[in-house]
Image (cartoon, rainbow, N blue to C red; front, side, top):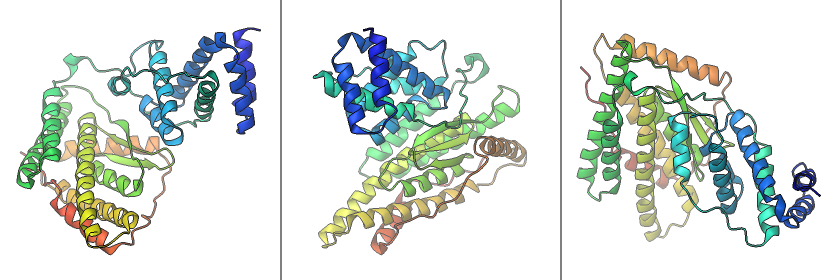
Length: 372
């Protein structure tokens, strides 16, 4: 019997049936034929390539596998993605490359007994086979460095400042560091807009997906939406798959990722501290306290960011920013012609709401400086 025939029989038995008995049958066939391993891996790479054709990206696949399955499946998926990347005909763009780099070179899942290993592979393939189509982000290859001014140094400074703000135990130092990071973000964004308007380089709005992980993902999605809006971007949340798609110009997308991550770290730290104080006072409603805390934090930070976004700018800059805002809106509407709104649920703890609002007021977010 050929190895291809073994894989075909295992797939017919297990991939198109959701039952455990079918899964066991397919895994038994694969476990009994070690020579089928190479063909099995090749088919897995084909499933991964098919996911790319349906609009998925490496980070999206890893995220959904982690959400739906176990660590062993995540390691299997990462190994398949790395293997398939070696067969890609050309580069897919800087964000794609960064996602591959984040996978690292971790060891593949240990095989151990063949039957459990084959079962895990088939469970992963079942998931990959059923991935629906996503909105294609159409990332292009990295632009010619001659077409753009260097930006890595500025973004590196911003990342370093926010990392220090998150790590320090001194509020005054954190505020100074975060304020400086905000100032650099604003300067960087405006510089990019002016350079594009003067024809220094051609740029169109792009898009990226940012994970919005459970628990309390509704509040986190609200926070990300607020950060996106303050940085001239639009965010659309995909609740079933655990991410938001953020649409905007490249420099603004970088700012959104950095600021959202930093605020989430600050919120988690403040929530843990406030929760410990509540427990010391005899309260035990941890889940409702956290849900209300993060909802309040997102609401209050959103208000602060909205105020920051109203910073006056010079008359000659207004048409530039307006043109870019229209471009972002048009790109968002093309990607998502139909969207719906959702109501924030589970906000019932008054103490959690008050503590979240207090933490948001203390968060290191300042209005952007007046622009020249």
